[in-house]
Every structure is written in structure tokens, then in C-alpha cells.
Image (cartoon, rainbow, N blue to C red; front, side):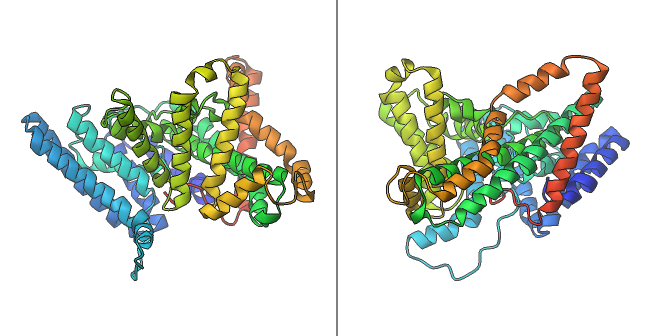
Length: 466
């Protein structure tokens, strides 16, 4: 079931809110769990079995780790923790990377690997965060197995994140409040995310899909850059839109999840970009991989090793393809250059220049990300830098610049804090006109989003493979 589908938006979601509001508070977690299981079963009922097994395993493992921690049996606790992490990681490897690994060592897999369960990476990373948080004593395990199952499978965050750490959600499962304010702000955020995903990302996607049908060998430099720009902005609006929807859903039911995107395209460095892009993923790798390995408080060589492991895993997290690995290593190199080679020089460069440079570097990285193979990525990058193809500009580039230039401009303005700052300033004015205008705006946003929703016979979320 898609969060941006007609069935979810107009039946499942409003029915969930109504039922949640009507039933006694003590049954609300049970209702959300039941709704989450229904949500999962719509994609593939067999997913319930795997998610159920993962939930049971991690529930009892967390209890065992907590017991061992209380008894100060550190060695045994670490062994159980390592086993728990290994089992969760094995699940990811089997579904996402087994065929890739076998093919790269020259072995053909003769049996079919079942499709990965919905939100596999997201609920697995959440489960690992639970084991680690309980082991460190940051949070106690949820004793009620149904509450723990809700943490793993809550439909608001399950299919494509954000990755909610255990310590950030466990207490909210036991104590939270649904208020008129939370419902209103959550619904607004959900509708904004819906509009970002369906209207803006959908429109950008139509242009990018047209680029993908073109022969890369004949592309001009301008055409190649336009394609990369359309993709970069499409991905941003798609993923940040989905994150807004998920966070908005959580807010309606009383959960407070941190934002997952913070206008990443205004970043003035690659370090700044990764503090703003997919924040929950970066925070997860920082807290559960980078810092436990020693972070930056180690020797220079060890620091580079720590960063290398994190960025190799970051690339692989996005998919089983060498393009994702190279994309991760590309960002590793940029960060190392920024932190260890050009640190003093960058301090003297004006912020606006650094912001433009950072944006262009991320766009170059996304061309590797969206390419089917390394050879395709190489060919596309060569076109972007004027090597081969049909010169600086061709008729196709002129056509797409003329037909999609305004859309690109609007999308780039929307990716800055300008519109949200204007919106916040307007909402602070407590007047009838503002309230009516706000209601009309969100009604139109829903109406236009619905039109896009219906027009798309197939609406696939870009990160659904995770």
C-alpha cells in the first residue's frame, strides 16, 4: 500500500484517525499495530511472517541483553548483542545482496530469492538500534510484546522511513497524546509531503524519464546537465515529500519524529549536506557504526578507515550495485578532501561560491547513483564535461530547457527555506483572512495532488526497493 495512493489517502488513513480517536486510550497501541499489519499485508501477506519472526527474535534478544546488563555480565551481553546484530544483518544480506555477492565471485544462484519485505532496511535498522540502545542502557526494553511489535511495524515509518531510533520512540509508545494541534500540524505536513511527492517530483520525473530514453552517446553537455538536475530535484522532492508524509502521520497519532531533510541544497560543504540530507540515516550510521569504531578521536589513519567503512556501507545500503558503492566512495573522497586537504583554503572562499560548488558536486554524484552500470555512469559524466556527444547544446537540450526551465526554477526555489519562511510568517498572523487562506491553500493542494494521483496508473516510490 502506498502512502500516496488513493486507497490510503481517502480510506485507510482517515478511517485510522477516526477509529483511533473513538476507542479508549488503552487500546490505541493495539489498534495501530492491527492497522500496521493490515498495511503490510496489502503488499504481500507473506511479509507478515518475516516481520513477525524478526519482531519475536529482537524482542527476546532485547530482554536477554537487558537482563545480562543488569547482572553486569558484560562479555555474555556483548556476545548476545553481536549475535543479534549478525542475525539482523544476515537477513538484509540474504534479501538484498546475496545474488549480487554470488555473481561477483562467479557463482550463479539457481534458486529464486523472494522479494524483499516492505521496508526491510528500515525496520531492520530500527531493530538493531533497539539492541544497541538497550545494551548501552540508553533505554529499557518494552515489556509488552505488542508495543514492541508496534515499534517495528508502525505503518507511518515502515515502508520508506525515516529510520526512527529505539530510544526516540520507545517512551512515546508508552506515553503520548493526540491533540487538536498535533492533528492539525500533522495533517498539514502530510499534505505538503503529498504535494511535494505527487505534484513536483511527479512533474520532474516525467522530464527525467524522457531523458532516460535518449542515447547517451549523442547527448550534448547542456542536455546531460539538465537530465542530472531533473533527477536530483526529483529525488529530493520524492524522498523528502515521503518523509514529511511519514512524520506527519506520526504527529497525528501523537508521535514526534525528527525531520529527515533540512534544505540540503543550500549546503556550503559536503559535511553540511550530509547533516541535511536523509538525516535519520546519517544519524544511524554515526551512532551505531562511526562512534563505536572510535569516530574522529583516533589516529588519522584510523579516522580515514572509520569514514571509509561508513561510506562503503552507506553506498551499499542504497542497493546491490557497484554504482551505489562508487557513489558512496565518491562522497568519501569529497569529505576527506574537504576535511584534510582543502580545509584552510575553503575557509577563505565566499559562502555563495561554496554553496554552488557543493550543489554541483552532489548533482555529479547523483548521475552515478541513477546509472544502471558504471559504464553508463562514465558515459554520462563524459557528456556532462563536454567529452564526446553532440557538443555544448543540441535541439533536445534547447527543447527541454524551454519546456522545463520554469519547473526547474520553481523546484530550486522550493528547495530553499524561502517558501517555508514565508509560510511560517503568514501563519503567525492570527486573523480570519489568514485562517481562511490557509484552509483554501491546503484544500487546493489536496485537490491538485488527487488529480496527479488519479492520473498516474503506476506511482512507485523511488526508495521502495529499500
